[in-house]
Length: 72
Image 1 (cartoon, rainbow, N blue to C red):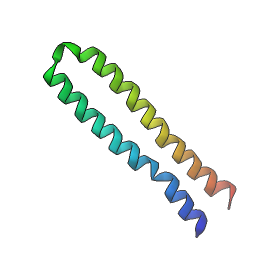
Image 2: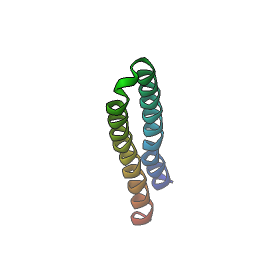
Image 3: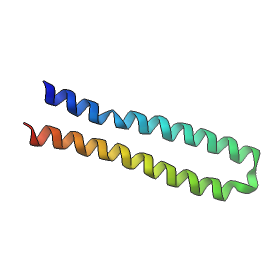
Image 4: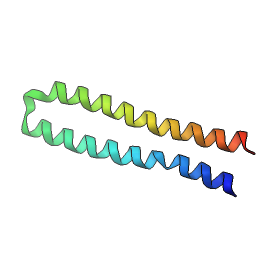
């Protein structure tokens, strides 16, 4: 039971990453709408931020798998 709970908590990092990516995309879209000439630099920063947030979610998933497989 505690192993499953630990894995579930580790997987919750995906929720935070999803919320963060959604907010970043929203703000980037607003910024491009206000200043279209800066779209290139905004998109570059957005892609970098999304990649870092997604890496956090993947780390949480890997930790959850390790908890389930190694502590069984």
